Length: 253
Image (cartoon, rainbow, N blue to C red):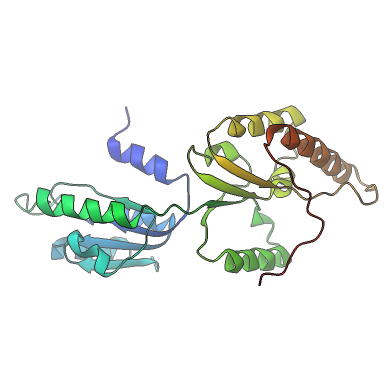
């Protein structure tokens, strides 16, 4: 059976976040873990030993700020965050009489809930840049700037069932790249994946590029992509409550 911290880590791994907080730094293991999934991590402890141990552990990380003070005062440094970890008790290898206190911890949790109640929609980016395409990377960078802090970003090129949870809002951009990444799979397999996520009680917006109006490609793989795109588009029309065809985009005002 997995431990509570293992369970928490598995839940956190499903997404990417802007800001994360390790409310109980300890020896820095949760701080290090959060740094892989957050743009920036803020970590708190009142013991110098904890700070020194964590500094050594995360010395190669550039997206972490450590504080030698009680987590009770985290709102002096952070006004908005999406994920946080409390691992209560004493510092392993330290003074066992120095433990987290009920009063300050409860006060901190109440503050944390107040500051984390604003739920942003999730932006599910499906492009896999393992091909090192510089032109596509420029497009990705532009998208990141345009969506700014309006979304929580998730990168998932193949299996959308890994990242869709109930009671959240998602923009999947785009289904075409997800399809491209899954060309080795059968049509029915891809349809089942879409059917499964559409059963989840969530708001999901799919973006699919219409590639069926051009000339017929000469090569087999390109024709397969065009055919699959049409078939997947038909499946999405069946699954979605509303469908819009967009011919021309608009400049942001």
